[in-house]
Image 1 (cartoon, helix red, strand yellow):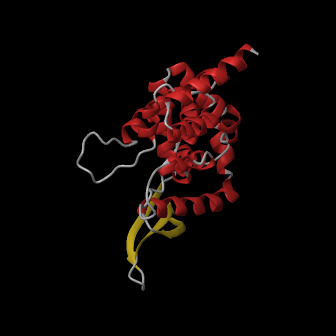
Image 2: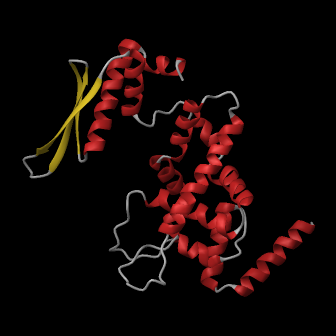
Length: 254
């Protein structure tokens, strides 16, 4: 009952101090993080886009994203270190990469609908990584506004829960990296030949071919060199895994 009274009074006092717009913003943020805010301006900055204005006083989310990236990395590293006391450095590194990679952070940011806090017009083109960037900037704001321990609890209890992390244990983040590791263990050479191609519609694409020693395994075409090599590696993985069980070899040597 005392806690309920405290929270009720806290909300009343906060409403008196904040504008109606900031109060709604604060309330929605609290639903996500489970905690209140001391400096609402930090969170406004965390959800502000870069503008063409030369006014240096106008801030955007990028600095907080930079900080949040490091804070998030530290929280996840410490969590993995204590959760898997017998795991080697290679396994811990792989798990951390799966958790904080851009694709996973974008997914989490999308699920939290973080872009709804942005203020922008319909003509603004958002980066494909904006959701993950905003998640990191939110972590940066939490760290500065509250403290490391509170930020850690929010991350592990509300944003990146251990149960969500466990789902990633067997997930393949990079087929190219997996093939490279497998090739090193098997003492075979995996190489990529990637070149630019101009399609009939004048669009530039990249074609990548995966070779196992002197044998051509697979190829793929994509809009960037990185995407083409990853897609070609994925196809090569499925072909080779049927023959040699790459996943089993990787698990045994992890």
